[in-house]
Amino acid sequence: MLLPNIQSWNQNIQRKFSIPEYLSHSNSIFIELSIALLSISFILVVNFLLKPIKELVLSPYLLSILPVVFSSWYSGFRAGFIAAFLSALTTVYFFINPKLALSNISSDHVFVGLLIFTEGIIINILINLQQKWLHAADDEASRLSEEIKIYKTVDEEAEKNLDLWREDKEKLEALNKKITNILESITDAFFALDNDGKFVYYNKQAENLLEIGRQNIIGKSVWDEFPEIIDSEFYQKYFRAVATKEPIIFEKYYSPLKKYFEIHAYPSSEGLSVYFNDITRRKKIEDKLRISINEQKQLDRVKDEFIGTASHELKTPVTTIKAFTQLLQKILSKNDNPSVILYLNKMAFQVNRLKGLINDLMDVSKMQSGKIEYIYKNFEVNELVKETTEDIQAATSTHKIIIEGKAGCMFYGDRYRIRQVLNNIITNAIKYSPKADKIIIKESCNQDEITIEVKDFGIGIPAQETKKIFGKFYRIPNKGERFEGMGLGLHISSEIIKHHKGKILVKSKEGAGSKFVITLPAKSKELKIKNPDNKYGNEYRKTYLNN
Image 1 (spheres, rainbow, N blue to C red):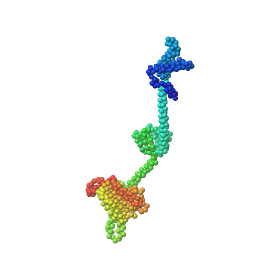
Image 2: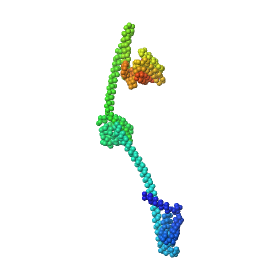
Image 3: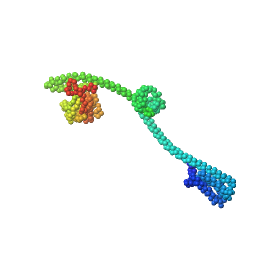
Image 4: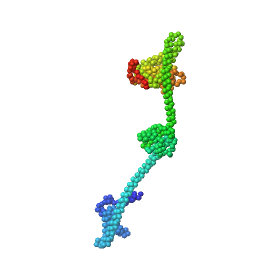
């Protein structure tokens, strides 16, 4: 506070005793001489005015000093010098030599004049030095005042920045605490490595899984703590993740702990973050499941081989039985005993049913092995639907089959297999709607696809069973009446439609019937390989040895 006070004091002095600006700080000798003369004249006039009052008469030495002080202070060294010279002359002339005659001036008078002049010069010099010191002090005070302002501004900014830093620090600490709480509460084990492979974080789950306390591992190298993983898959994955800066997920068996771990490694500029879980139990289940699947595949293969062999072996005797049954029907057709005819007809029906089951088994076996044969030709869809429904209608009196619409499109495919699909769907519709009296078939065709819908009004299919009905040997569970069949018809139908690049879907509601929708491409791609012996005329044959 001292420097600002000096500066203020100096400014106050100059403000109180200043002369007009056009007179102060002038380099004009005339102005300086005028100031000196005016100051001396003023002192002389004052002195003469006060002369009648002897107590108030000023000392001649004091009179010589005042003009020098005034002139030197306000006009500088030259004005002070002039004032000192004139003061010496006027003092000697008017006061030291009372006779006011130059002829009476002695050497003593000259000496006194020189002494007064010297005194004035000294005072002039001191005043000028004082002014220079005051100006210097004023400049220094101004400079220091500006610096103080700057320091104050810097201090204020520093205080603001310090407050912001404290606020950011508190936020960062809160964020770190939140992240730490998250990492400690997650079910995953987690640790973080720096760019030198040293542990910088290690949560509680990692302690439990790796059986090492965090106080024993923080700051240590992962390669020193787990030397057995050097050159292992983790070692290779670690350096690959660091090099590529891409996350890596893999599974690894850690033999010292006899555990399987699923590891997620996420690289960053600061190192590597690793999440991992103990998947030992899952791996054991997967191994058991894999063994079960392999065993199931083996069983399925044995079963398919058995089905194929059994159906093939059964086909010959059944064919023979059917032939002899037909022969007996022909021989005994004129027999008057109706019971004989009835029994023969029943026997023929059951033989045909058994033959159909054997054919289904053989088809499934061929599909499984990829050896089923498809004979391709162009045929009219509406004609095939009409032909199939007429044959089925002739065999049933309980249901009326109603055809709506007309698919007047040609289709290139296996006519026998598509008829097999229609036969399976329609006979199922009749079989699973014992209390209904009709089946509705709708046909439609456009430039992209052919659609055939078969709707019944039977028992329907539970919603949870609709995705299973096309499975092999699958039968819809029914608590009431038991329906005949092995659960192969829909599976075979689905495989045939898939082979023709089509789709078969079911829409059903339990107790309200079902609707099967068959969709076939209107323009099938033909593979034209003419039969060499022209056995099929203009037909083309396509054999799939690998379905």
